Image (tube, rainbow, N blue to C red):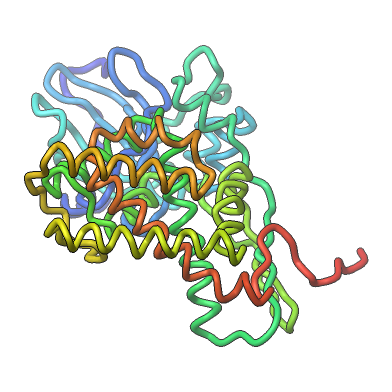
Length: 362
C-alpha cells in the first residue's frame, strides 16, 4: 500500500475507457486474496498482463502491459522476470478500481520509465511458490514445429482456405482438451447461454480462438510454395494428432462414405421431426423435444464419436451441459469444416505433419 493516503501521481496521456472493452480474461497467474497478475487477450489478439501495482484506502492501482509470445513463454518458464517484461514493453496503461471491482477508471497511457517506483524487483520471477495452477499448466504445454505439406495446383483461395479451416479445427480441439481452464469453460458456458442453451457455430470457433493464449495458438513460422511446399506451424502436438485422426476418416473413401451417410440420415431425421437449423450455423433456438427424440439425438451424438474415433471425447463433450441437439449441431459444424479439407487430402495436395520439400543443407 502507498505510504500516503493518496497514490503517487503518474504522468502520461489520458485515454478513453473503451480501451478495455475488447479485452478478454484468459487466466490468473498470481493470486493473493484475489488476482494480482492476470493474462488477457487484447483487441488485436495480442497478449496483455493486468498487474496490481498499489492501493490507497479507497482504490487500487493497476497496470496493463503488452507481452510478446516469446516473452510470455519465457516468463512462464522463469527464464525472464516480470521486471524484464516491464522493460520490454512499448507502453503501459494505468487505471484504478474502487468499490466496484469491474469498473476501470482514469486510464492513462505511459511508459515504464515513468513508473520507476513500480518497477518489479530483479528477482520477480514466476516461481512455483507464487504461480497459480493455471500458470503452471500453461507453462507445461509446449508447442512444437508442425508442417502442413502442400503440393500440386494451388490457387490463392486454397492458400487462404487451408490454414483458416485448420485453425478452426485446432480451436475446437483446444476447447475440448482444456475444459480445466476456467476461461475456456466460461467461454463455452457463455456461448451456450447466449444462444438459449445452444451454440452459434460461428461464435463457437471464434470464441475458443479468443481464449487460446498466443503460446498455444498455431503460429505460422514459415510459408514456402513452389510445388511442393509447406506451411510450417508452431503448435501443440497433441491437438495436431487429434486433427490427423479426424482427417484420416474423411480421406479414407469407406470411412468418408459412412460419415456422409450419417450426415444425410441426420438431415432426414431433423426434417422428419420438424427440427430446424440443421446447417444454419447461427440458429441456437431451443425447442421442446419429446423423450424419444432426445434419446435418438443422444444416439446420433454417440455414433458420430464412434465414426470419428473420438470415444474418449464423449465424457468431455457431455460436460458442456448443453442438450444433445446443440451438441449435435456443434459436431456437425466441425464436420462441415473438416470436410473442406477432403479435396486436398484425397489428391495428396495436403499432407498433415509432413512436407515433400527437401530439407535444405545447413
